[in-house]
Image (cartoon, rainbow, N blue to C red; front, side):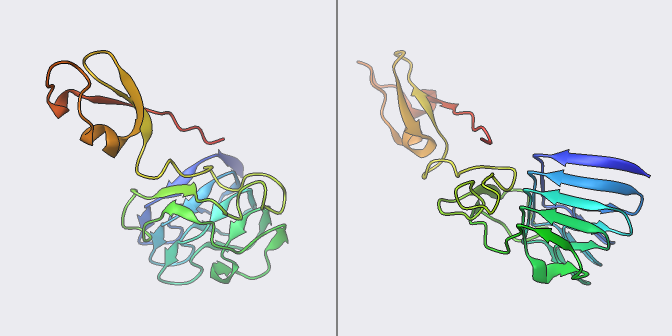
Length: 199
């Protein structure tokens, strides 16, 4: 039996006609650290994870908002340990999971989407999330992402043909007027996207 580690990964928008909407194993030990598992769907058991008779460990991981047409919308596992994670325990089977500092609360995703329909969701955390280090039971970030991007879209440098730039959101850049002595069509403006780090 081998082992697999997922570190700071997002599993979203996956679907299967069998077990395990995002991940299914019956032969490998699985460890998830600082992952977000959301909006996955399966026709049978374990909308997020299906782990049959193999060890499963979740640390600082969110497993919520998955769907299973059979049972266990979040996790279906017989040998699972959950540490400092946010998991919908009512959607996990069997109920004999080993739990350490686990919360079962809305993580306040920035822009979630329904399970299995799209990968377009924003799984960053809104202000006040119980998964931020200040609120989490272990004092560390739970999930793969920190806070939401700025309201109104991505923020970055909106640069004009005259060489000037302003820090604006994407919609503000698209709607702004050029600052040169000539009239410049709006299509000539460019937004340099800000890199978002997970921490």
